[in-house]
Length: 267
Ligand code: AMP
Ligand code: MG
Image (cartoon, rainbow, N blue to C red; front, side, top):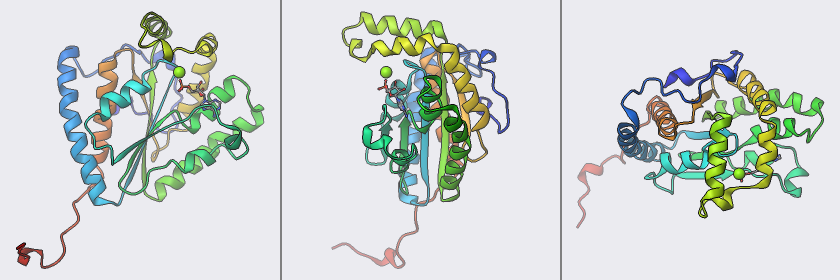
């Protein structure tokens, strides 16, 4: 799964990444779903330990094109984790209050506190993705944001936040399929937004904007992972395994009990 990590300084070309890839997993979808069920249990245990340990925070950033699977990943990977220990923050088009501040203002307050996992469904990266593609601010402003973001994330990491960023990579054809299925299914139709087609028309511009993000903001302390995401089961496995490997690497411990606890007798 480490294969999907973007090393700092790599020039990423998304045409070279196959969204259909299922590298390292030859056992098919059914076995993958069974494995995910096991991983969920493990993740629930690790989240409990993260909370008890109380020394670390975990931020998980999810970015993708529309229908890329951000919602599905959250649902599938975090099902089973204690809701007290996980929060999801979704970033929509900024409100007028948010727009009257700098672009990191609304993001900073959503960061995890000690012992917490926070999942960002979209993030401050929208400020160099949709904002760049649709020219919502002039280039001289968005151009400087890559550096701001790297410095901001370095500060968070230095202060004890572990950061993992996932770009869920689907193909343009897969997006068409998913849009069609949204339109055909009365339970999914509400998710379809006519503006989604405007973004779709700018697919190549978005890919260029994502390449800039992945090439310029993957750092040792806040790495990006490019997840082949046409197969939902593979996408979920990659995200779950990466979270687990990372949490296992934190050397989390249950705090030692109060001295003399062995002598306590509950009467
Ligand atoms: P959804 O995630 O499908 O509910 O859509 C949220 C919409 O908000 C997407 O079209 C995003 O591009 C948009 N959005 C999120 N953050 C920003 C931002 N900083 N500036 C402009 N639009 C944004
Ligand atoms: Mg949407």
